[in-house]
Amino acid sequence: MNPKSSYRQIERLLAHSPTGVSELRFAEHVAEQLVHNGPEEFGCAGAKVYDRRAARWQLRSAWGVFADAPHVELSLVDVAREDYPWVEHPYGAFAVGGAVVVLRFAGNGAANEDRDRTALLAAVQLGVKYHLRRSALEDQLEQARAIQTSLLPAAPPHFGDYDVATAYVPAQSVGGDGYDFLPLAKSALGIVVLDAAGHGLPAALQARDAITGIRMGVERELRASSLVERLNRVIYQSGLSSRFVSLVFAELDSDGSLGYVNAGHPPPLLLGPGGIEELTVGGPVLGPWPDSAYRVGFAHLDRGGSLALFSDGVLEHGTVRGEPFGPSRLRAWLEESRGRESGAAVDDLLARLREVGGVPFEDDVTVVLVRRPESR
Image (cartoon, rainbow, N blue to C red):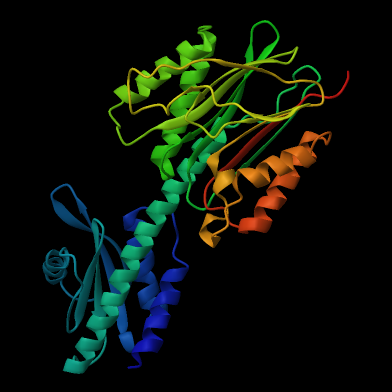
């Protein structure tokens, strides 16, 4: 037997296994492949799959030649429930979650033959565990992506003569970015950009809950500071002390008046006639302290000016390569985009990010750009 060649065959056999199926269906797929496409030196003449139902094992599927009495097979199933494969001529068995695959080998049962089969079966078991864990992770990431996507508006809002553009580029590891636009009374638009700590499904769920809380507060016509303070208490009372959320909640009036609360988030940049202003007024991140107080900051979006809100994935992109994009480049982009259509400006920012850090992004990148034209 050529071990390297045999292992490569096992890898190929498992590489095209289905994802998103039950452990039983996966066990059946592996068993069928071992009989019909397994390494020739493996000598797998037949296979059966048993599943634990009620208080006993039940035969679910069978392939190839397997003529032994059922009581022999069931004794093998009990042995194979342990977390390691088992081989003894002419049988082999290994567990796949709650199922067990029992194999019937052809051959004479020589000592070296059984050793080789034990090694190959160990490779199969390892590959099966890896595939199941990868499948579970991919499923979790897909759930997180679906949750994040559900948070995002289908399109930028139409608000007066303002020009609004957005970008959301998810990283390989899913994070907790989110943004939303909320219609307010008296011809005003609510804008929220947030980032929940961590990655994966927990962060996506935290982001979803935070945006839901903002929406509920807006419906109750809470003042911005009261809304954020209440949301902070809710996050704290969730008991997840390791979870926190940074956000900016802004209220933009049609005349350019801007009120906002910055809760530990990278300060939005407001471009006006005199240069760029950072919107820093507010308070700490949400979650760690139940009695945090938040103040409302005030500014004005003049005609010809722009408001850029973003997540820290923008500033930190490129860190892995040792050269993060950083605030200086972001300011330069905003200055140089003065007067440009917002969609083109956001596209240009994404291009600049890729030049510095390449792709994929290390963290989610979220951008909301609001431009106010020079004149109606």
